[in-house]
Image (cartoon, rainbow, N blue to C red; front, top):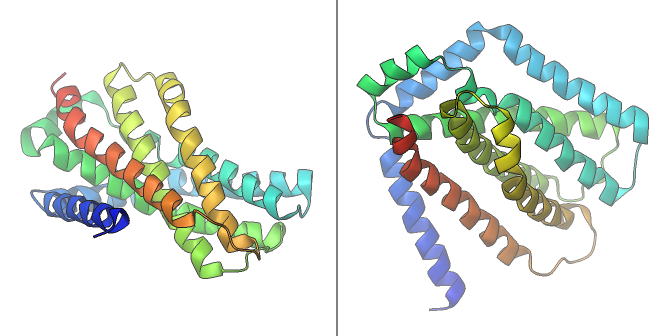
Length: 239
């Protein structure tokens, strides 16, 4: 069996284990709770949508319809700002009294997984809106649309799990949001570089070597962040 097949089996085993952990306890109830709160506070959701629209419009007014590589770079930079505003508030908006209540009814790993899944759903929706606006205003250089949407979904997962984990650390460190920027830079920068290189395959008309290896590295990095969140959050939870 080749090294890649062994790696894929290892990743599949981790994913299966995480899926089993996901559906334990009150995970679905917590995700439903976050969705209901977001829907009731429509001004927050519409504020994020307005931010996405304004960001894409400002990019359009400053650059017009750029070439392929610049379009790709602008798209992922926009995704970074959208993730910062849409996902990073997941823990920071929770009051301390509510944390104490959650401490009595759910496991910390279940709570962390629920936040990561909800953040992924929210960021994926914002990313698709952003992609639609980019195609309308800045042109559509994408050759393989389905592949680019898949990479956008992978990017939403990557950014959401990182910022959710950092939001949990910042929330337990006296609500210090500046801590997310300090910790997030060395984590998010390589992710954005890998996502940009992966997206080139869906945009460039020529073959891009090393795409599969890069995708596996990004997937492994995502799983590492999820595992760190599940392992370390219980210690933050008890503070």
